[in-house]
Image (cartoon, rainbow, N blue to C red; front, side):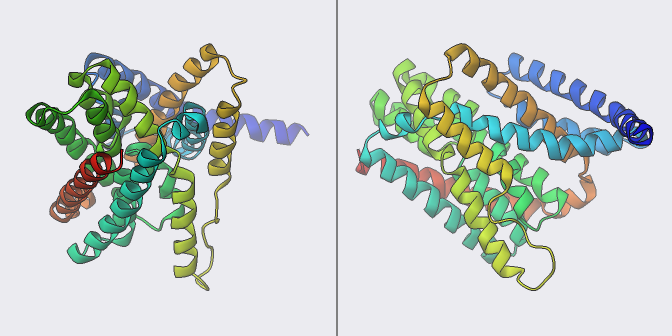
Length: 333
């Protein structure tokens, strides 16, 4: 017993330096996001992670704790993400909007994977970008990376593409809304159906008014509901591909099942709003810590090798999801 306790203490002591670094990165990420609301804390976190991981002579003692954060914080954050979603909210959108969301997600995912093949992009990067762009940006990338055969650079590249092209959509869509004279409802549905990150969705819909923002967020969250089935589908595809090749990814990771249970709990209506507000902020903190840790393992030289092709993939996927969002949301009221 004494040896067990001593070993646990030693293990915890080895994690503290890295955990302290991760906490500091999360604090900085949240501060930057607070000053620049259009920039997601998750995006800032992964940038900080890449920067810290490539500093020569960065304390080796921090690496164990940072690696632990990448695994544990990610899973906890994805589970809590489910508490932001309610089945009732999604059903309240109406059959037309729900059908449009399904089409946007499925066609964007399939089209992005196909485009990745055409461009010669690695399978892992294609799957990460396809999931992130079709569902919920960096959070989706973080959720699916555990069931995909990929390099660490692929994760950072995917999040970078979410940032770049989500920002383009965030700035470009309000111009289209104004030029076309769209109603607040239509503007909100299109923003929620096509922009990558939740924060970017809010920024894109804001010029059309508070009503547009409210609709946009619910439509966006209806895409997030599809995170669990999407992870399951990707995992099944990866299992078939790696059949007989040793360890295969689980059909449904336990933390994704936790996500579904959290959605069910939120849908039951038993949790007070105060609790939901706290868990929303906690989710952002956990995912920011996880993405910092994932970025920490990236090496810039390897990341740059993916540059041109990854940029083309991000641009093509953004054009696809935007075109589908506009078309389906206007034709399927």
